[in-house]
Length: 189
Image (cartoon, one colour):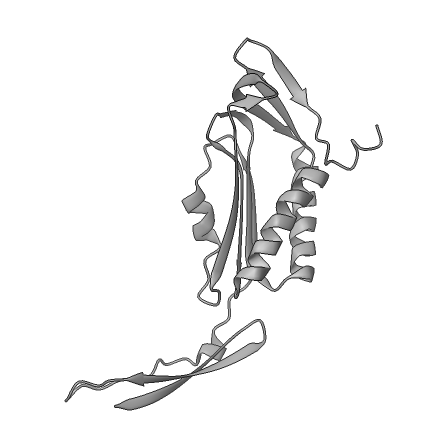
């Protein structure tokens, strides 16, 4: 039996592992050419507004990193009811320049609070039928606590700060633009 020491780091935490690898008679083992400490990957903030159906798999794939052991997701979907009324879809509108800028600020806030690697925020615009995703937020980090807390912060901040408007469309041919009670500019009204 031979041993190989591997050293890796993520977010300035260094861990050393001693792996015991059984070698088959006559075989050889070659250590990887690059030390894991040399692996560098630029952090990404991916923001997208679209009228197309959102894919949880697509968004989660964008934040995968070999440096991270956690990906946390929030998926907000259209539900079929609100205050006793049957909802058939939601309709979203956004002031895109301000919305994108505000989400960039949220990503920056997250990076100052938690050691995360990648952040993706996708929001649907236009009609979103029942059960389909309106928003998907994905965050990767070395450990689960940072990504879980960052995702929770991201959806709360998005709802409070980003100029996105939602209209509920009901079965009985009526609709209602919804006031976002969490939005900072709505609380002073």
